[in-house]
Length: 305
Image (cartoon, rainbow, N blue to C red; front, side):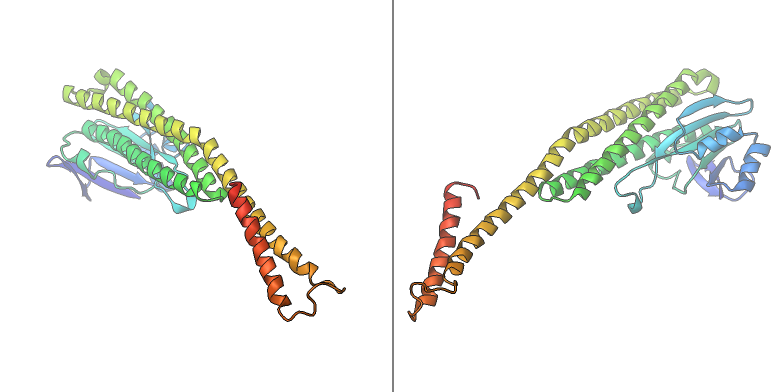
């Protein structure tokens, strides 16, 4: 699907005219791919990299344009079971247009970063910042979800909460790799600032992006280290909860066995004391209850329960 945009009044607005300077291709079909390759002279391998979620971020200089492969968070789906993935975005900067290729639909030019844009390079830098901002938002969500899962693990014996934590830990590994490769890409942009004709104000914004990306990486690293360090402790808690449950069941079983033994003794088909007494039934029940109470009191005294 193709969408057209233009820069007007410091904002990116959608248009339907041929004067569009921003072209966005969302999950391009074969016809759109042929247009990108044959008409815009975009390298076919680079185009496929823009749609490959496992591709690393990189910067390439082509005869007629500059190609950037950028990593960004993928929209979370409940079917992923707490696994957050990353996807790729292709940015192809020409003299008179910017082509954006993404694999899934997502609002690209919304929010505060796109309030004051005047050139195509401004839009490209804003897209870089937007990717970092999305990573930060997802990291906050991962942190909140992990804390909630930890609380559930403390009071539960189910393995699914541990598996969810494993999925979050795996997600953070993906995010660390993606943020790191984005950092390498941003550094290459700065090193080639003259070749890319980046203005002084844009250089200051690029420096801010580098700082934000470094902070994002450190935050993801902290979350990853914390989550990995508590996994063994959480697994021990699950085992301890199971042991406590088995201990409680054993106490209940023993508590039931003692009065059962008393009743069984007086149920034998032989001559026994009190078999001709009218109150024998209540005496036996009293002995059974007393024996159960005595066992429970003994366990309490020994602090076994």
